[in-house]
Image (cartoon, rainbow, N blue to C red; front, side, top):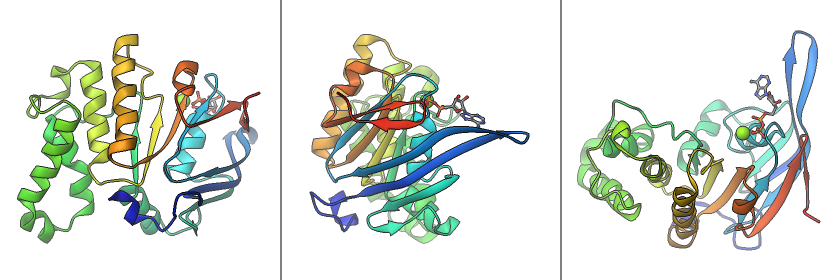
Length: 242
Ligand SMILES: Nc1ncnc2c1ncn2[C@@H]1O[C@H](COP(=O)(O)OP(=O)(O)O)[C@@H](O)[C@H]1O
Ligand SMILES: [Mg+2]
């Protein structure tokens, strides 16, 4: 389903980074954080980038997900150079092709689970399609929430949910636009061991059920072992594990 949105076939490259760098500046002093990353992600992969806190994982993920511009280098999505594309084009790809799951869920506290999950659709749909497709949209949102085990929590606010349920709601929100690529930044970083297992089970199931390609960054070595491919990030650079 979602694969049809990308031209790439299995074996080809879906997302690519070439010579990616990012520096922050304290006055005139440069603080290099990502120091030249080359990376190619193939459709259907679960790539886990593992490294200690401060290695530059979130910074890298934000550049790959077009949330933050690189200082140097390029990002290609499905063969198109997107790092230098217009803001509108980058927003289109981010909203329609990418999904994001973060450590701290980033659910809006005043919206219930259904409304939080609807948000990405509000951004992508025109006013006309918004009104004409109400039933389809509700079925979609409720279907994704049910698939995340939240069918009985549709009207709950985030504060009324457990940590695991909040993360499952955030995953549902990330999936509602059928993204081709799902970016996860420490998706289990705020959860206990049992809930971590539950969220990982959900993530691996998504990969099979929704045919997503996953790029996960984490400091959790156990999580890193469960991907289809692992790279280590140390001090702004990627390394193949020994
Ligand atoms: N907006 C920023 N301004 C200045 N320094 C930053 C900023 N964001 C991150 N850094 C620094 O970049 C380094 C890497 O951060 P980050 O990518 O969050 O690492 P990780 O996700 O691996 O823990 C850290 O030393 C951090 O302090
Ligand atoms: Mg981080």
